[in-house]
Length: 154
Image (cartoon, rainbow, N blue to C red; front, top):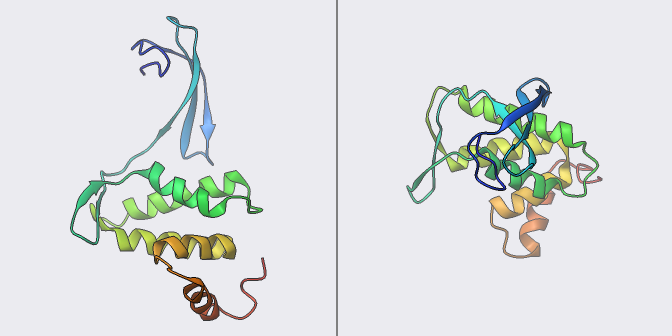
């Protein structure tokens, strides 16, 4: 593993332990060249996924990109970081287990929205506002009114 500080290709693993509900390995590493310490995570990847955008453009699936958008939606919400990480890992496993390598971006957005709706309604509305490209307050009002009564009491 290359050192992110100095670029040295020979780093040492100092500690390994299970992480994220045993779906990843957390490794603490040390660079003998610069003395830097950093952490890496190792996960099983069942298959390489490709995201097919609405305009037909194709790009490699990026777990971190999906995780970033979920974390933004969950910002300042009363949800434990471990629960968010478990949700992200579950979503990736779900995508990998479809048997398909080409996943429409719409499918990814919908499964993320489905998962967020079960975890936190405010995060669900936040994510939906970006995913569905809300333009004004009326778009929020319409979306929220379609939710079951009392669902946005968080």
